[in-house]
View 1: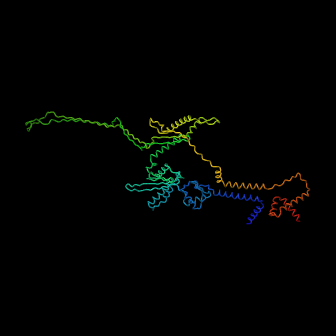
View 2 (view 1 turned 180 degrees about the vertical axis):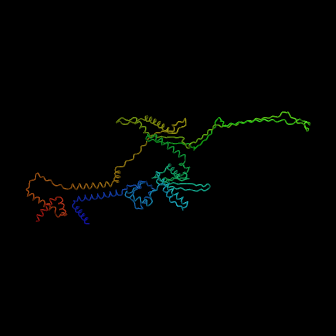
View 3 (view 1 turned 135 degrees about the vertical axis):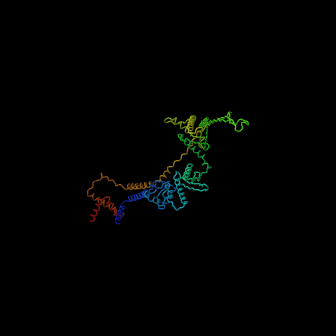
Length: 546
């Protein structure tokens, strides 16, 4: 305490020994120092210069759990910028510990399925296990969809209906709800991607049974084949139109302001399969067989000599000499196996192929004037001239022919004998001047800048005010009168000493008057300003008193 008292007394004596101007300047400097420390403390200690989770993006759907974890631990020194959360660098461990404590770490892919498998219980029912895995799969699918570019929120639900019968049949249906970023709406390409992903992730589910609902546009894209947006013809037509439009626009990108519109007519036939079998004109013998058979037989003449005498008993045998009957037969057969040339032709035609493509190209009128100006640059220092209508018309015809030739090469070939150029129509339009946006006024810009940098401006103002006060106090001190020593007469030494003593006595009397605030302070100030003079005065006082 004695040290503090001495320090306080020293500061007090120093303050009272200062002039009023010095006191004001010292006070202002103390205010500036305190304010500087305050700004340094606020900007340095609580600076949000560290991204949560090493800069990993936190989806809006996961930010709710993260912010709830921070609120549960009383942590509020953070800010949110899009999908990033910035926290104080010195408190990173506290923020991460709060997320771990409240289970608010953003999930990763397949984490839900892994938890469902790890938490399996042999005593749970089959239905309970199936429902738990179903919910885990829905969470996993929704997490993957949220990671798609342009999707802020996603939810997936699917169901299975057992139709029974023999054989048993199951019907799978799924519904997906998404909310794009901001006020955007999902397009057909994104809808198809979502439906295909969900359909291929669930076995037995068809993409036609997956509906996608857009929360921003409040539209539901179902698998209804009657929906024009889901029609195969409309989808294929749009695909070909976009493809040719991109190709033609890329070929004509040297024309500033060109516009390309494409219309494609498709062959309405779906997949057509044709099979044809043709036989050759000349057969080819593969196998030939021939058979020939000949038979001959001789039969003696039947019967003997007629009459009773020849039939009487005990007659001597007689040999007949009559000729025998002879017969012969000859049979032949021939077989030949032959085949002809066979040609089997199978042809399959692609479905919904482009049948006719028409293109409209719009060129601004000032493009032709630009070509003429490049071909006829004005002389140095001369004013540019304006071309006449005939010259511009000729340039326009040349440009149109060039565009038609380029576009026709990108289109499908026409049947022989047809003119391909009617497919391309080139027209010229007058460009409409776009209204220029008014630049912000200087006062508005200054106000915005001042609102963002008022703290720096205030500190500079305080510093300048302190410098001006110091300058004014220094300039307000009276200058000592200059004495011209060249015209002053010499004074005897004794009189000079008496004059000095008289001047000192007068000065002391003048300074140590009743109007002085404090004799002690005045004496201290005089000793500080001129110690030698003060010592001489004190010596004279002591001598006079003795």
